[in-house]
Image (cartoon, rainbow, N blue to C red):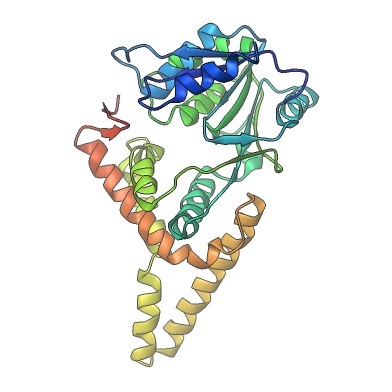
Amino acid sequence: MGAELREVIVVDDRSSDATAAIVERIARDDARLRLVRGEELPEGWVGKPWAIEQGVRAASGDWLLFTDADTEHEPTSLAAALAYAREHELDAVSLLTEQTMRTQAERIVLPSILWAIAVGTGPLDDVNDPARANALFNGQYILIRRAAYDGIGGHRAVRAEIAEDLELARRFKADGRFRTALVGASGLVRTRMYRSFAEIWHGFVKNFALGVRGEPWLAAAALAAFALFSPVQPLAFIAALALHAWAPAAALGAGMLAAMAAAAYGMRRFGFARGGAWWLLLGSGVLTAIFVTSLVAHARGGVTWRGRRYARP
């Protein structure tokens, strides 16, 4: 990963597999690798912020890279990200990792979900504009100058947040003292988020409702937007054809094609695999169901993720 790499700290968050043994075996041949065995989750903390907090305590570098265990990094990725941050005088840079999708469930559902997040957040120019409130980090890859990280309170400041990457980005924007950017990975980092429909469902149900921040009008607007591109639209198109309502059918058909064309363009800009836009209507239907389920779960007191129960703070 380049000459800038000082250490790799793996936080084993009380896993039940062979993670710790594998890390310890590799560490015997590379002194830069260290294992931190996760402690019991304290009151008021969510799992990932707590794991990161323990890793930060063990870290010694002036820059901190937070990355998930399921990411794959090219050897030059860290050096490239750090050079980009220094060249643009950034205190934090988060990479939009390339998404690996192998099963049909991943190819059908994930592009629509990730595209909806991108549309809801706004253009990258707005996300990276200090004058705008739009804020987003990708928790799979966040490189932060330690002084800036400490300056906004670190993960301790977002310890109760399930979507800790989103809240960390919002905290940086609200603080205003530090410059941040969300940029494409350009082939440097890849990840496979989920491997089945069940993993996709549970993974997004846990946090999708948090994007509307408890605002009923935002939830209603999001539901309306998702429904607009769901299977309701092709069903209405078929009904219009059956009733020989040619003008509404033409309008619906044109709307569907325009939506898929816009999604295809946007998905290419974000590095998604080709073809994801063709599944936009079906994927948006699943997304609508995920969003409703997430809203209901959080309204009823919280969600369960990886054996832990989290209530919204």
